[in-house]
Image (cartoon, rainbow, N blue to C red; front, side):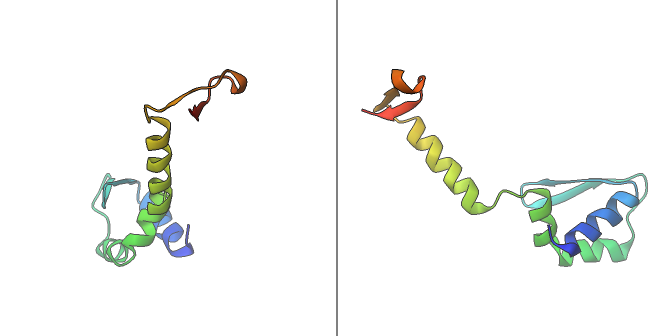
Length: 89
């Protein structure tokens, strides 16, 4: 997490807001409207804040999808030697 993202998230939380990432959007729920300058900074540093809220990178997601694809292939079966882990036939 970058120092900028950490500081922005701290300011949002100090204002009593819960902040989350949903898809490519940052959402928050606060007891009162967030200050305009804070909203402007969130917009300017959206990419950094999104990375802090969702640390999985695009490369990591692609690697996970590739692993799932391999593990769910029909030509792969369990191996008794390795406690049922799936290996190619």
